[in-house]
Amino acid sequence: MCGICGMTQSNAASLRAMSAALVHRGPDDEGLYVDPGSSAGLAARRLSIIDVDGGHQPLSNEDGSIWAVLNGEIYNFPALRRRLAGRGHTLATACDTEVLVHLYEDFGAELVHALEGMFAFAIWDARTRTLVLARDRFGEKPLFYRDDGKNVAFASELSALVSGLDAAPSLDEDAIDSFFTFGYVPGPQTVARGVMQLEAGHMLVWHDASAELRRYWRPPVHAGKFVGGSRQIVAELGELLEISVRGRLLSDVPIGVFLSGGIDSTLVGAIASRLAGPGLKTFSVGYDVGRVDETAPARAAATAIGSDHGEVVLGQAEVAVRAPAALGLLDQPLADPAFVALHALSEFARSEVTVAVGGEGADELFGGYPRYQWLTRAAHVGEYVGSARASRLRRAPINASRLGRLVTVAAGEDPFAAHVDWVTADRSMQRARIYGPRLRELVGRNGHSTRLRSRVADSGDDLAGALMRLDQLVWLTDDVLVKADRASMQTSLELRTPYLSRELAEFASSIPAATHVRGGGKPLLREVLRHELPEAAHRRRKIAFRVPTAQWLRGPLVKQLEETVLYERGWFDAANVRGLLAEHAAGHDRSSVLWPLVALSSWMSGAGSVYA
Image 1: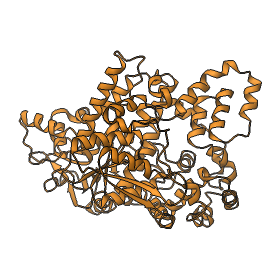
Image 2: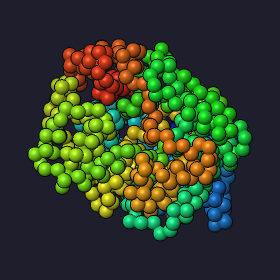
Image 3: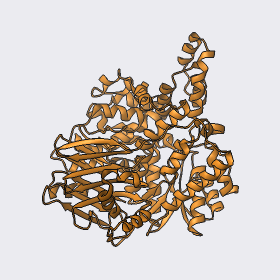
Image 4: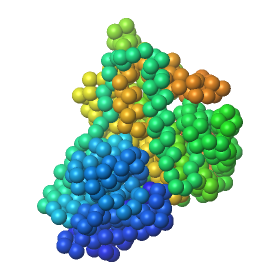
């Protein structure tokens, strides 16, 4: 795991500035290379996981004509290394980065198809003066770039990229609007005008002052049916998951598992414990307020697995300090409240391990979100409800989640519009009330559901499959995996995700979406868990990785929104936000609107201050 950066036209000062901004991603080592013939440069900060002593980056081929830097892990690199040696290549290290330069010698930019892993990498070919950037299939590892029409600069984090530019870009108001609506900035957009995210499953190839974007993979369309019986499906799924977990246990440093007590992490923990043997370390997080604490089910799962379990309690006094600090260090604002808890859990685990394994991706690949079923029902109910009744139902002042879903189903609301409303807790409707002058003109624009629909318009999926695939393309990449990457890397911990192997994802897509969402979701994973660890194969209702946000916003984080740069700089309206705070204090839960403001305020006072 590393932080990487570079430029096609560079100088040592800019490279070192970008590299210094990535020290938290790689505290163990620093390397820099500038091509004497072109001034193109690469730099890397390294967190040593594989070949601790011999994996210095940047790393080259035998004659020094091809150089590479890698952020992440290539899980199948041992097999690739053997294959390359058999083809006559000389490999000087046992590091996964080295396979990139030799694969490039054989296959050029198409080398990405040989890789299984989480990665963002850069390859500089000094012979042809070509730069290749690539990001893994689901976007587990980030990569940002700026193309000014002549040269390209890139870095693992937006803040690092900006630190190497001559001047900080301006903030993009449209991106801030998208952030408030979704709670994250959907790629390829960023908050910095003129800077882009390289999307998951994409490459950028720069040559002769021209950059070309190429998509090399995307989540497959769900099949009409799987050829085979249910026993065969479960058996094959179990085998693929075991292969994926085994690959993610590859490490020369201590490794553990993040355990919530739910299906996803318990299944990964059970397989990891069986493969690694007794004494596997597991970790969970709890709270000193509210009723969303998961330490008890995590403890029960750890007992069933037989792991060496540890837990940390995130108290309100600590939240008052940790939340603004960690949110302020983000390279882009992120309004997922679980980020703060994951940050605390990562810091706690880092005292004992350098690598952790989590359950991210299971819900998106195996139908874990209840909204898939609800929205499918909504799409088919319109023919049974008259238009006048549907119109009245849509105007009904109902906010409770379950009753609200029933209204949506009965009203026959457009499923993609309902999807946006549900995943954003209807925040778009609050924009007119709380936006300040810098954002107010954007209130009338509301094409979010149209843009989402376009992402899967040509997929051929049924509705449930389209929504699952949409989450894989957007929500998973730009929220879930950003949260996992930044929370862990701020504490110099590597977090791995077994559910996001290519083979597992492609197998999941071969099964009808209706099968995945049956019975509350994830029936196949439940069945695999029943075979793997019968005593843990419960039917616990799906609960997201939640935190006591409402209580935090009535206690330790109230001051964060009483006075904030968001008002001073015209982003939000002070009086109306304080009105929401008063409503929240009186017992009306306004967390879904207030938390993005806490996240944005913290970021603008921290890493975002360079844009002011």
